[in-house]
Length: 269
Image (cartoon, rainbow, N blue to C red; front, side, top):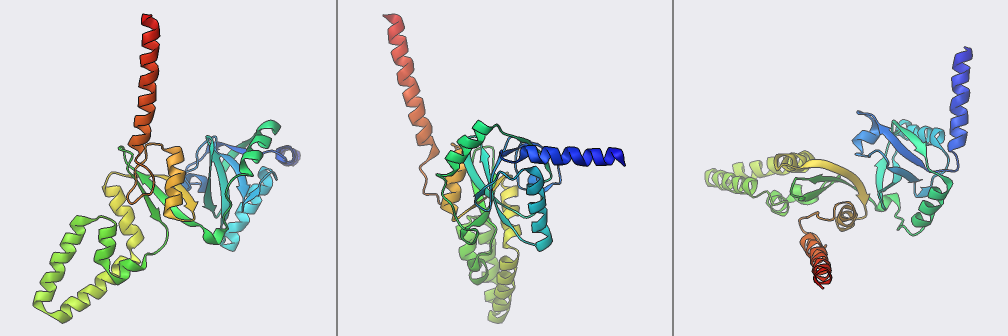
């Protein structure tokens, strides 16, 4: 009993010491909520529900565990490298933490004060997939009505051409047999595409050689692209408003070439 009480006292002291400073993830175990959110070691817990969080590890674990009991979710703001991003959290993270210094905490608080804040109702959750050629795909965790109303348009938007071709040929065959059979087939496919669209898109992404890379929340897909470009400067997207990453790379290479040329000239002189 004495050993158990001593352990509890040590935990209380550690929790009190953590208060007033930001928490940094030290290690992540598999099959935990942090692992499923694709968080990484050295990620910094900055804010909970858009509020700068200095309450310490114990309160963080308790508040997040309470979310699961109430079947709720909230916004968790993470700082990775020099950039912020948000995720939806629904349970305790299940990872080990360390604390930042007072100076580091103050610097991040200053940076966080300039971050754009969005209410939870405005945010959408995205699963971010990428392949070895830096082709990225942001899959929104919501249902598209178009998939149920007109599956060919949805397949065309997702650029699944071989499936669209198969669907078109199959529809023409049914129509040539009987219009009622065609109508029944269309309804069945529409219901299936609407109900299973998330699994279908995830399956298409995996079949194309992509793997899950991040989970983020953003107000729309264009904001999601901007967040991803911060972490992956060479990222490429479908239907993006961002500039081609090759242009950014070419500008860097051009400036580096100019610098190398000038250095070579100076060396020759």
